[in-house]
Image (cartoon, rainbow, N blue to C red; front, side, top):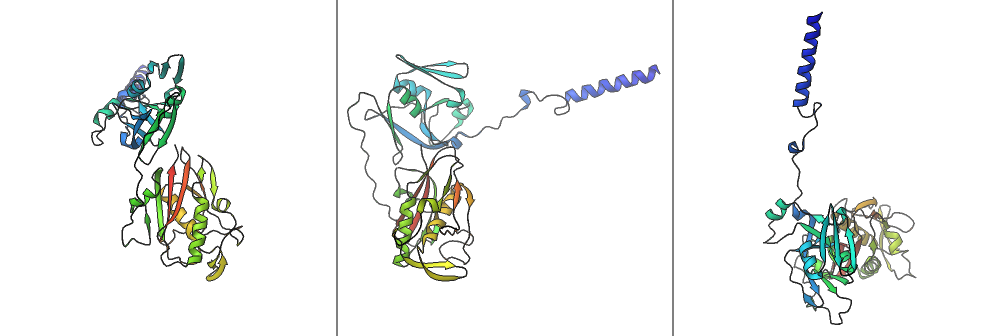
Length: 348
């Protein structure tokens, strides 16, 4: 009996030793055993920007940029330099102080880049700091006014007592489209189209051709595009094409053009609006916006690839989508030359 007890005790002892020596078998994985999966710095930079203070370009030591939440951010070092603010680290919070003004940034309010990423980052000799602060929030807390010109990638900051002009930037010429463009495509394929909206942070876009479309149909497309252009959708909000564009009637300016009813083409008020909705639909897909409702045509259409269309009708089929981005988005639409062009932009 004693031998059995001794043998049992020995087996238990060996089992405990094995379990605690083997990760995942009763022992907690130590911090040294966890290999962190670092996210490249490039993944948080939407675009680099310049900063102008009271009409003059600010001499930054580190890159300022728009992050993927559409915020303009500035390095802690440059924030102290151009705003004259004293910054103190208190645990995980940052205390900013200038004169009688004082406020805190909590840990989630600013970016901290791992030193290894900062040192290894190579975006054509870009220089990055370890800490980045939300530029608009900090500037406004310190009494400055802030504007953003995304055409040139510039944040324009004015002191409360500055009376001078803002910096002037040369206007862009209307984009010259390449010859022999396809009937449809993305703004990645033809990036010059993004120059139609030089002051916008464009995420993605799409275009379709109306080269062979009759004038009355093109009129309806232009009318519906104008209704959508500039619409802003907040995070989490569901947007309806029919709600924004409204009912297509003679009274609201629409003309008779071909529409698909069942398996036939027949004359109808507002014909062509489905090319507007379909081009928007493809822009949403390219921008990875969540589609809530979409209906295909009952016939094959010629201005898009198969299964990439979205028909709409007042009181019936609609195109609905939800802004699943952490920032507001803006619909941009224009009929330019022989193309219907849509883009989705991030709103700072």
